[in-house]
Length: 189
Length: 189
Figure 1 (spheres, each protein chain N blue to C red):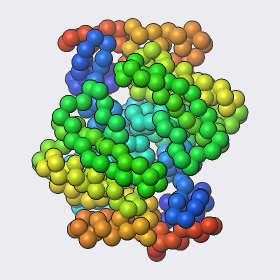
Figure 2: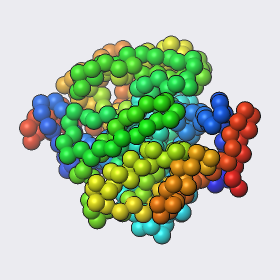
Figure 3: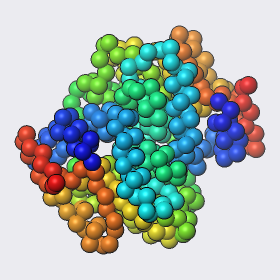
């Protein structure tokens, strides 16, 4: 997606080897107009998938997932990073964050995913695929089907996308990054 | 906002005295079409305010804030509940959660709020006003101006709205609840 790639080149910052900071337009400050364009693009790429629900993780996945859900006319569920005190019937899975070097548990209320659901997974980053695997695990626990996985930015060199594609998932990344380094952001295509 | 009130009556659940659960359309599963209507309503109510940015808190504030930001054509900043390892120049403030009975710190990168900014605060719930006060505190630290505060649901009986209005803020709540109890959701108007 050319618009996103241009914005990454303009406003993204590569802090250290392998870390891309996009907190001025995606994951701390958000540009809602860009996010709507992203929602439209996901709706176009996954038009074939007949998804019934979108699943994402708080917090950075919410904006793109809600825009995609708006464009596709389907509900969005965001997995929570702490289990709310008012939730029963929790589906849970573990995520390892390489950026923060810690583990956390994500939780989804099982009432919201039925075995008949066709789930589109959306998230901001695809790196090693730890969060994606946790979302897959939750959908499997619910007995539902994953019909696609969409990411804003895939860090190709961290191999999460390779792992998901080898498992047979349809992965669409709007910007695939081949290499990141000081003053270097190189896209795959 | 009649659409939101009807949806609260249809899908909201009052779990215990004073607690309203709206996790099947607002803060766990999200109805993006409803959220867009909410964004349009905020844009209409705050059209006079000439806001330059919207400030909210992760995670439940993000969807309504992004929809409002889209309709108003301005960026959205969401305060983070944990300080990211890659953030310098952090503005911070404390929030007490009465629902969870704990305290947490919210953080905003000071690069994103300038003294010339006219900030519209958006959040899902207004109860005692603890989160709202923390957002006000962060805007004050940045030397910017708050031009309005918008909430999806105000629990009138918990007096956060009274406190904010007495401080002189323009508060717009799309559904104001007068009383909550077993099988009772009573709106103010």
